[in-house]
Structures are given as C-alpha cells and as structure tokens.
Image (cartoon, rainbow, N blue to C red):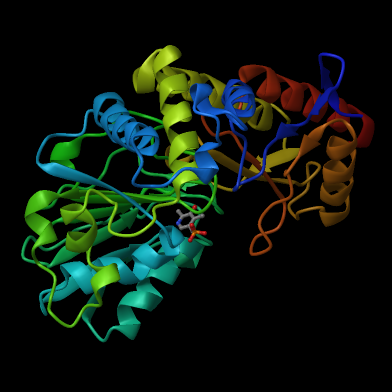
Length: 372
Ligand SMILES: *Cc1c(COP(=O)(O)O)cnc(C)c1O
C-alpha cells in the first residue's frame, strides 16, 4: 500500500540513491506549468534555448545557485551534460599540466574516477584509500602535495554511505565530486577549486551536470582537448555553446527556489542532520539487529548503508530481502543496498521529508519486533 496524498495521488517515500526524490512542491509547480509556461503558450521543453523565455530560466538558475551556495565571483558555474562520469574524464583533460595528479580512493565512484585518470596516462598518485576496510570510512591520513596539478576527493560516497566532515586542506587545486551531497550543507569555497555533480541525486533530474570551477583554472586546457570537452568552451558561452539540458535546468531552478523558500542551505543542513540522527539512532539502538556499514565518524548524512545481522556477526541476506519487500509494500521504495555491498541503503537527500524518515524508523522497529 502506498501513501495517499489527496484523492488521486499515490506517492511513495522514495529512498532511492539516484535518480531520487524531488520535492513534491517542485513537481506540482512543473505540472502546473508543463503545457503553458507562464502564459507563453508552450512548454519549457519546447522553447528555443536562444529564446528570452528560456534565457530567463537559465540566468535565474545560475544566479540562485550563486546566492544560495555562496559561490564567490571568481568561480564560474557551468551547466553541462554527460553526468558526473564525464567529469571523471574532463577533470584530468582540463587540469593536468603534466605534473602529478593525486587522488583519494574512498569508494566505487572515486575508483572509477581513478580509472579514467589512469587511462589518460597521467602521473597518477594514490594518496589514501579505505579499500582495505570495504570503504567503511574516509581515510584519515590524507596528505596532498601542494605542487600537484590537482587533488581529488569524493565528498560523499553514495554506495558505502561515508562522507567527509571537513575537506582536506591543500595548496593544490582541490577537485570535489559532490554528486550526492551538493546543496546539502554550506561549503567552504576557500578549500575548493572545482566541484562537480550529476544533478539527479540532490539537484534535479538526470541529464544535467553542474560544474563550479575557479576561473583561473579554465585557461589551463591543452590544445589537443576536443572543443566540447573544454570547460573554457562552456564558460565563454555561459553554458550555451550548444543546446543545454533545458528542462533539467528549469527543474534545478525550481529546486533552488524551493530551497530558498525553506530557509536556504543552512536550514536544509540542519534538517539533514536531524533526519540522519533519527535513522542512525534507530540503527544504534537496535541491539545489533541493524548494523551500520560506516564507521561512526565517517557517516554520510545523505546515504545510510546498513545491514540486518539480527544480533549475530553475519549479515542476514534473507531477512534483508524480506525487509525490502515489506517496506516496498508499505510504500517505501529504493531501500535495497547497492549490488557491490548488498544490505540496505536509505538515501535521505534534501527532498526526503522528516515524515518519510520517521515512517522508515517506525517500520524498522516493527520489523525488528516481528523478526528478531
Ligand atoms: C551517482 C554518482 C556518480 C555518477 O553519476 P552519473 O551522473 O551517473 O555519471 C558519480 N559520483 C558520485 C559520488 C555519485 O553518487
């Protein structure tokens, strides 16, 4: 049975890791404007990316992002395609100067980024890794060299459910894959030189990629890099070098307006802390029925990865499957852990409500009573 809102709507609580929940208010506004955007007589999807109608949306999305995320003037905001995965390739193409490039391996997505850097035959160095402990933590011994061409981290590890409490400090340009925690807490831009994110976790639908890059890095790019893969190409044309993902940018703008209406990023960060605490407390107070994957000091506020051990020392895959099935029947979807580690994962991005997390926690307590 799914949760009923109003007479006709059947909305589930979506704990999926991505694409993931979008605030209901945003979907409803998009629905109202879908066939006739503000009396223009057409949908945003149908509008030319060179039209005034679209340009206003494009401009507002970028300026809202700058305002809410407090992005300094010496950074460029780019709205691209290709997902975070294309950034794994574009970052080295644009930032490598032939010197060393340094990476932290904190999970599957950093491993994939590392693979791309290695393909490009760069002077690659692994600075720290938590692979040995099944990526259950952010490595503690991260020391980047100040003279590296760039230093690379993944701020939130979507699959293993770990996140940095504080970004490392280095004089080398710091590149941050923030695909699964962008806009979820205020960031310190003095530490960051390039941040990128696929939009589909915390910032909109899939198909849109956000890149926030310090302007001085844009000119680094070598002449052999194809035009469309240069940050400079997109920066010079205000992300209108070619057709941008217009509808995704429109939804991003609605989400940014929703964030602003709800108190901005400081307010959502507090809400995110409270949601995560509720869920981690439920895990910690279950007497070993539920066991979190991440070490406590590395816990992600966005993706909570856990197992059912039923008081034992081994994961109980059968009970986990039963949990997912019964949760789905109760209107909570997307709780199956990633295939690489199994178990359970609740993604509680900005759009997940406190009500949704409370419903999950109540379900967890009931499930434990019935199955322990
Ligand atoms: C989802 C995800 C990616 C991959 O994003 P795509 O847009 O599918 O390429 C990369 N990094 C992180 C941290 C992610 O969560």
